[in-house]
Length: 250
Image 1 (tube, rainbow, N blue to C red):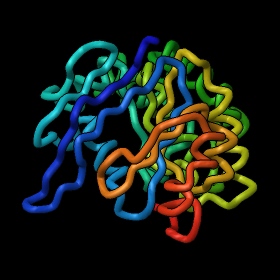
Image 2: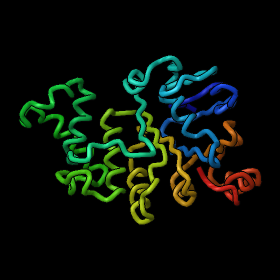
Image 3: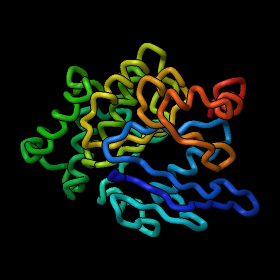
Image 4: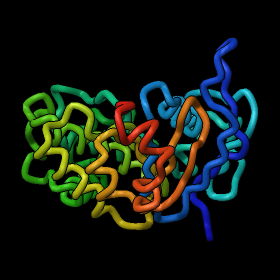
């Protein structure tokens, strides 16, 4: 099996607190892989280690067979790793199209030329429109972000990540704060992404996770409890005890 993203014996300490405890994770190319666990399990810390936002205390992060453990965030983006965050980081007064054009131009290394006439950005406009179409956002392309439903705003953030043309997309609670009806539409859209894009997501809506993921890893107290296909995870008594039962989400 070919892996898009891996960790090897990953540890992260904050003083005396062990936030990531010997995590070895394998995310297959083209996978729809979910990372779940109770509150305080260390899921976002792990995502931050994968993206280079944090440096591990020890262990390694491997992206497409290359050790990127000491590479900064922007180098990992160039190598094909993109992410979204729990809280939107969008320009409220810009339209969806303007935002994605800016992201496309960032990838092309000409984001500093945003002030040029629209006609100078023809290729970026085409790329941005294609992304918006792929995510079902073309009809709201010219609407200011602040005027869009929250589910659409989350999709714009995913469009910004996809503008970097990643091979691995990390989604940190994409449905957080999104009403139920919109969250289903959001996940249906994510599910339609081409398999050339490997998706690793954190999500605490288990209905969405079990409909979307083909592989699930369970993190507890910073350590990997188990990893398996959804049916096996749902049947695992350890998982039911710490997460799927009364333990809550996070």
